[in-house]
Amino acid sequence: MSRSCKTPRPNLYLVGFMGTGKTTVGRTLARRLRMEFIDSDHVIEEQAGQPIPEIFAEKGEAHFRGLERAFIESGHPASGCIVACGGGLVTQPGMAEALRARGVVVCLFASPKTILKRTSSNSNRPLLNVPDPEGRIRELLAQREPAYLNAGTCIYTDERPFADVISHLERFYRRAANEYARKH
Ligand SMILES: Nc1ncnc2c1ncn2[C@@H]1O[C@H](COP(=O)(O)OP(=O)(O)OP(=O)(O)O)[C@@H](O)[C@H]1O
Ligand SMILES: O=C(O)C1=C[C@@H](O)[C@@H](O)[C@H](O)C1
Ligand SMILES: [Mg+2]
Image (cartoon, rainbow, N blue to C red; front, top):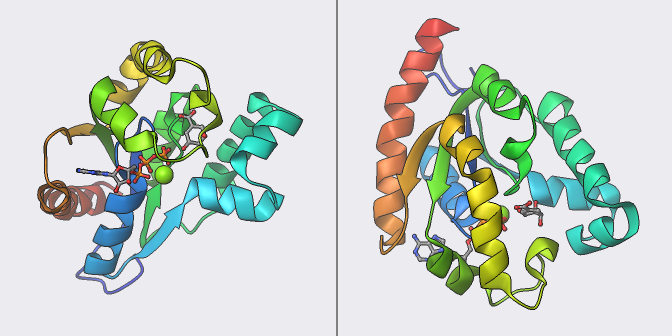
C-alpha cells in the first residue's frame, strides 16, 4: 500500500493488443487517481537505450520478451502504480499469473478494424510493420485471444469514447483494489 491504510493501491496492470489504449487510458487514469504511471515499453526502451523496433531487429523478439519478464518480476514498484503492459507481455507462459499475484489486471479489447485505425499513424510497432497489417492483426489477435481473455476482466473500447473507458476502468479498479487488499 503506498498512500494510506484506508486506501489500498495495488498495482493496476493494463494488458491487451496493440492500439487498445493501454498507454493513453493508463496515463489519464493514473493522473486522476494520483498513482504513478509506468509503461513497460518505455522502461525497456530507456534501459536498453534503444527503441523497440531496434531491439527486435538487433536482438530478436525472444530477447525483448525476456526484458518484459524481468520488468514484471523485478523492475517496477510493488504497489501504487498503473502499469501499461506491452501488447504481447501477458501472452508469455506464466505471465498472467505473475500479474494477478501482483495486483489487479484488466484487459482492453478492440476489433481488428479499430486497432488498424489506431495503430496506422506510427511505425513504432515492429510486429505491424508488414505489407498487410490488418491480416497480421487478425492473425495475432486470434492466436492471443485465449491469453487475453484469461488474463483478467475485459473492457471493450470500440466506438467508446475515451472518457467512458476511463470511468468504467476507474469504477472497476476501486472495487477490485478493495477485494485484492482483503485477500493479500
Ligand atoms: N477509446 C478510444 N477511442 C479513440 N481512440 C483511442 C481510444 N483509446 C485509445 N485511442 C487512441 O489509439 C491510439 C493507440 O493507443 P495506445 O498507444 O494507448 O495503445 P496501446 O494499447 O498502448 O498500444 P501498444 O500496445 O502498441 O503500446 C492512440 O492514438 C490513442 O489516442
Ligand atoms: O503486441 C506486441 O507483441 C507488442 C506490442 C508493443 O506494445 C511492444 O511491446 C512491441 O512492439 C510488441
Ligand atoms: Mg502502449
